[in-house]
Length: 120
Image (cartoon, rainbow, N blue to C red):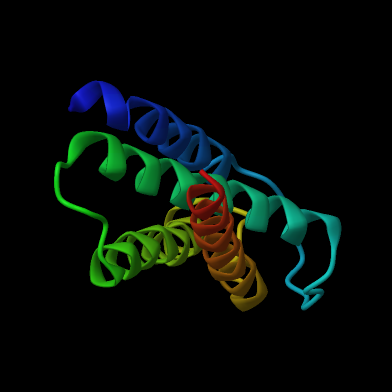
């Protein structure tokens, strides 16, 4: 069971490491900037890995509520990392557009997972 969640855990460590790196940023709102695409990609992969791990470790089918829970978990982590950046990392800001990009990426990861599972 732990082996199935290992990729998601390692990806989560990568996200955390990148999120807590100090840097100087100026707050601005650019939803379609390149870094927002990176945010979306990273949280899309996280959601995908969480869903994949759940499917590999459970005998019962993945219900809609379980999918929404894992999607919410990924999105919540994106919000939490924004707070951690603001509160504990000098030169980092709490950015709403980053949180939105994280959430959009998580939803896209969910849709991609559902699409691939449907194809199989």
